[in-house]
Length: 187
Image (cartoon, rainbow, N blue to C red):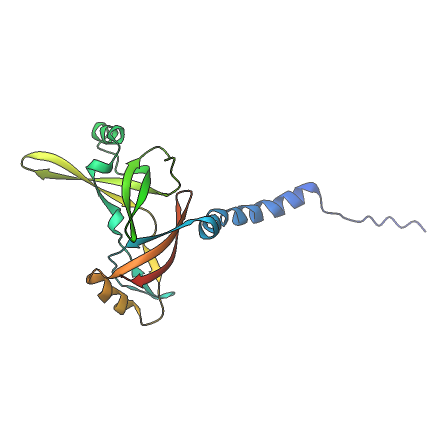
């Protein structure tokens, strides 16, 4: 009796189709993990607003002091680019930070990656204002570090402290990527 039972083994394409999505998902964790384990710890001053998320609970909507910068720290070539192209509303930038006492502050904003290790990637948005008949720009920067979940029923306490300017956030920074570690009362 001839038994023509063939065994079906997974092909190379099966393994590729299986491993590609897994590889993509794993690659999304590399940058946050690098920042968390090998990043430099900095402290940022915050000004939060406290909403409540139905699914996640209390969180503090954060606004950092480094999110608004004066034109004196923005690269001149980038300023010229914005003046020539006023329709664009966001520009990808690298923000060099320096420690100033216990917190970090903006040292320089540029489209070029800095040589220093302490920097964040962000999106620069010009805010045009008129002063004494002249157009002047202030700049806002979005770092995607604006939400931090806190213990249930503690959000209002953090909001109260923030309105008094008494909240700092510890952030780990590596390769332009920041990971929020904790909120703490200002010292």
